[in-house]
Image 1 (cartoon, helix red, strand yellow):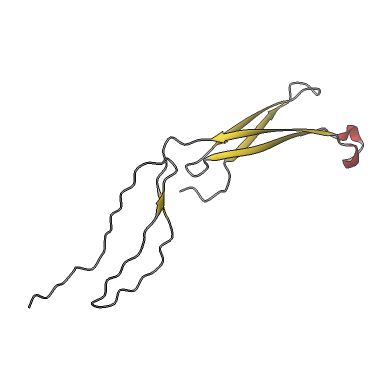
Image 2 (cartoon, rainbow, N blue to C red):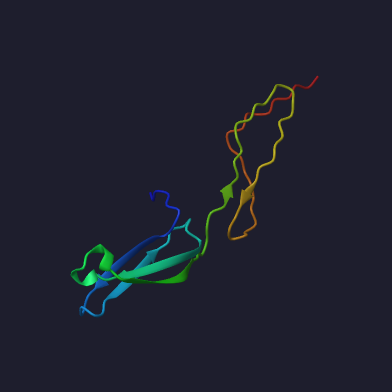
Amino acid sequence: MRSYCPRPIFRVSLRYPTAAMARGCLRIAPGADDRGDYVVTLTATDDGDGGGERARLSTSRQFVISAEAPSEAPRLLPIGDKVALTNQTLSFVVGAVDLDQDLLTFSAEGLPSVRRSCR
């Protein structure tokens, strides 16, 4: 089971063919809940030519990664606990959202049996 992560998981692996040029590979593995657009900033920083932290130079580029999912499960909106009183109707609104905009149907399990007395 995947733990909740608010953004897709990114992994960067770098290869250094020469001291003057490095190449990297950005791999993204978005999960089912990672749909959306993500502004990514990549930064390359040199070693400062031995001059320490202050001598380091860097450059950055930004771009957008759009993570899409072919299908996602709908999500029920919060309901909260309810109290049903004897001989009174319990009624409340149930809501759900579906990012795929599919038609939703609802079902319920675990409801008490309805007893009616006929006189």
